[in-house]
Image (cartoon, rainbow, N blue to C red; front, side, top):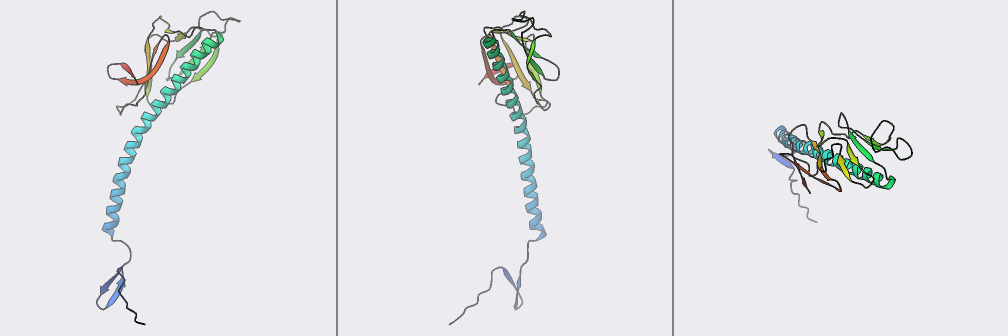
Amino acid sequence: MNLKISPNPSFKKRGALFVERGGFTLIELLVVLAILAILAVIGFSMFSGQRGQSEAESEIKQIYADLMNAREQAVAQKRWVYVVFGASNSYVVWVDTNPAPDGDNTQDAGDTKFINRTPNLLGMTLSVSGTPPLNISPDGIMTDSAGATTGTIDITPAVNTDQALLDCISWTPTNMEMGNWQPGGNCVIK
């Protein structure tokens, strides 16, 4: 039996001896670390922009759902419902129940609080056009307190970032739709 011994490619020949090469050089390690650091910075900056967009979309969808729920309550209970936007980006949905049994078609302190919410806007601002509160009749018709029949609700980022796909709501007396807020102050329906 003839055995042929061939050198292992992970060994270097030093003189007549074979020496095992152990590990990586310092330069190789530094290059790999630099590449990983660059990728981490790029990934983090992309992720932070996406997070703001995602939060804006999530919150505008929640506001939309709350407004639809308020409209459903107005029709189901055959009562006026009021959406009052307050300080610190909060809003409260009131059902007109005072005085009992049918209310008095005005929002007052004795009405029933249906939704009380402060969205988690992470430095963004909630803006409402028109004259709040939004009034929803027992027929589901929406107006603002001055009688306007159209309006918008939008979420504005604190810094200029890429816009979220959905960051505004455009409403008419019988319809609400989500869209993308454009410079110049209009909500483009998606």
